[in-house]
Length: 97
Image (cartoon, rainbow, N blue to C red; front, side, top):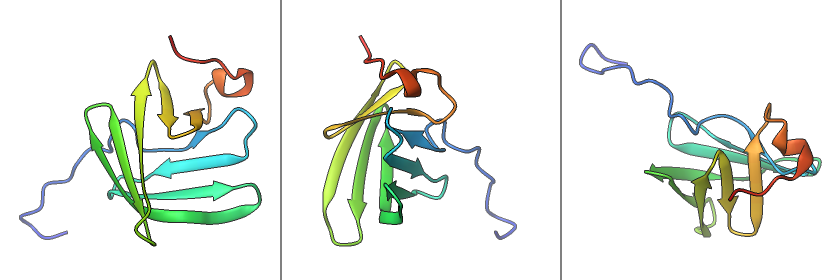
């Protein structure tokens, strides 16, 4: 960081999000990247992540793109539904309204 850079607060959607079965763990990072684990595969997908309002846009290292929306504290990402790792709903599979 240079003296002209202004530190930014972490984005409210940064952090670990998981499926109710725990098999997919997706982490949007404060630096505009993401890291996704699947099953026992760490960093199965990595790439860039852009947040615009409540919309997430991902592009992985191969150029594959995916989008998601955040609704009622739930990330609906393509065919996945993810909750914050510490959200009780993550273990109950609660769908947003």
